[in-house]
Amino acid sequence: MVHEKDLQKQAQTLKALAHPTRLLIVKTLLAGKKCVSDIQELLQASQPNVSQHLNILKVSGIVDYQQMGNLRCYHLIDPEKIKTILANVAS
Image 1: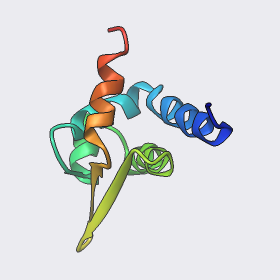
Image 2: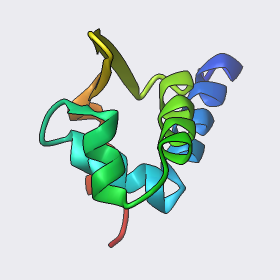
Image 3: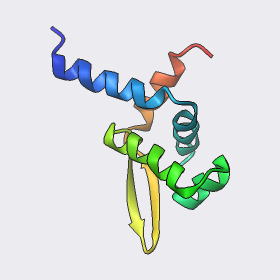
Image 4: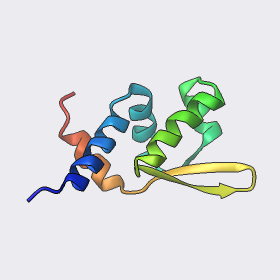
């Protein structure tokens, strides 16, 4: 039996991944940990914009970060789950 809580979590994950910028961030993080400045450079976006997208991914339980001095470096919490999701989405 499917629980409402599980459905809510799944919907939140899919919603977070449904934005092209966040999808690019997640695909980049599949290669390994990246700091905000690295992601900002890749996206050619402002730091506040990148941070907003990363926050959505964090709240959704997709990414987490480590503070390294002044740097905040993000990584995927469950890369295999993300690979499975992406493999099952038509491209």
